[in-house]
Length: 323
Ligand code: NAD
Ligand code: UDP
Image (cartoon, rainbow, N blue to C red; front, top):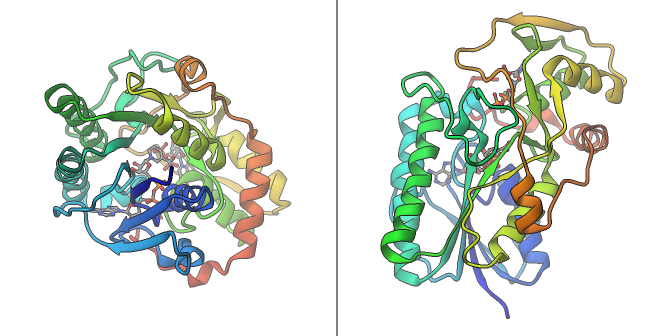
């Protein structure tokens, strides 16, 4: 049966792919976005479709849409974006989520929320299982995002306990792919843009900090499976690729795959509270969603670099000066 599905943050990097998959599956899709960190070009190809609708709205203000399911992705995700206006980031994570959950309660919709590996902060347990409660600095520059997302998880579980709202919480680890904003300042987009433009590749710190990179198609597949999972699968569930790489290894791989002559340089000290290591334990996702990533980093980077080559990077508006 066709469902009416709302995707908040639907014009963003992940949201636009989710919208695409849902439109292809024949669902009735509403994409809601305030275009803070994205541009209409991400969903321009969907605009003429009879089962796709675009609403420009900010989730920090209430709205009312009669839908069956909500994927709540609205939130700046890149550190440079969420730190640019930290109070707004916190409002989006808290007031925005209260608005989304209030609407879900009234219309009886199921809500999947995009949480993050940042709820683990700079982790002291490695790899990170969902049972780990994290090591977050509540007053540092990343706190607006980390604590905002932690408060959002609390709200989801309180709505679930108090009002039986059907919830799904996924903790997303670093995800990359085509349609990342070239000026979002995230490591994959920065390195690829720098490699293609012949600029220095900027490692922060000594490059020994690690991340685990998931290709966006794998991630979106997991989100779709999570939404369709039985109601007792509330999560939180880690979604990410367990392949762990140092940032220096990533830089070398980008240079290799792109054939760039850029130099890898140590550009600035490690930013405050930058997690030193990060790797998802995906035992739960394998068991509950029968999911694991299919695309290895080299393959995903090849596809991503191909996309970056195909767009005119000068035609993108930088959402913030932080890149
Ligand atoms: P993105 O910045 O490309 O997308 C976020 C979208 O939300 C943008 O289109 C933005 O304009 C919109 N938005 C922001 N604030 C809003 C508001 N108040 N009202 C309405 N729309 C708003 O980032 P993304 O990588 O696609 O991330 C999507 C979601 O996934 C975010 O919630 C993010 O926290 C989460 N996530 C992503 C990653 C990742 O590696 N990509 C990792 C962990 C969590
Ligand atoms: N990073 C880097 N050079 C850059 C951008 C980021 O070395 O040009 C580092 C950053 O300090 C962090 C890692 O890459 O250790 C991942 O950063 P990103 O902003 O992509 O996301 P995070 O996982 O920190 O939220």
